[in-house]
Image: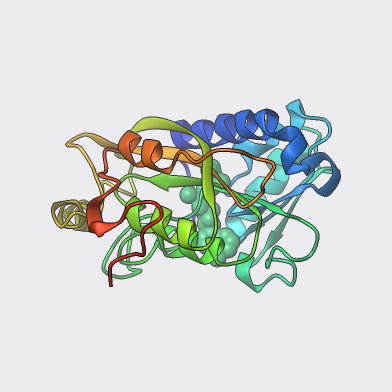
Length: 251
Ligand SMILES: C[S@@+](CC[C@H](N)C(=O)[O-])C[C@H]1O[C@@H](n2cnc3c(N)ncnc32)[C@H](O)[C@@H]1O
């Protein structure tokens, strides 16, 4: 097993998580409850956030043993091992991964590579045929607050529609353009992304795509809903798939 490596994407994830946690500090209550993380990778992104936020505690999980080994070394090097722990294993197999065990907030840059099957450069990054399988699973896991990366080519309209059906609102997001990296540039994956976008399941340009680190919440103390703004930022039509906020999804 290899370890995920994409410096610009990880930096965007870490910075955005930091901004969203700070902005919604009181309502999210992470100083009291901590947060959990699906897919720690080498931990550099969030270890720097933990180092800069003395009240933050993170329990991370990664399915890749080599990622967890790298993560533990990076966390120790930053001196935050007492507040950032990482376990090896499937996040969804953890006893407390259901959001019901006192940790209402989950953070994640989840696997989102869309491909016809798992036989890709780094199989741990496979997000299913449309790329959003793990994010959909996370939305169904029962957390009140989900801070997660949403990629423009991984069927974001279905993701945000499903989030709405589950009672989540898009409180806020930070979007950034990313060049195709080694994982999305793999010919089999690029071809699949082209097909998905042509069929209306997302957006990607010739040289890159967009990722929005998004706070989806069911917390009444966090006001507003920027779902339409998010989808427009990702170059997607909020009304595609026949859906608009407040309407039942089309069959
Ligand atoms: C896109 S990488 C993000 C890594 C890191 N958070 C970052 O942004 O630099 C996704 C990570 O999720 C891990 N992963 C995939 N499926 C998982 C699962 N079911 N449970 C826990 N981790 C998983 C992968 O091994 C990979 O390290």
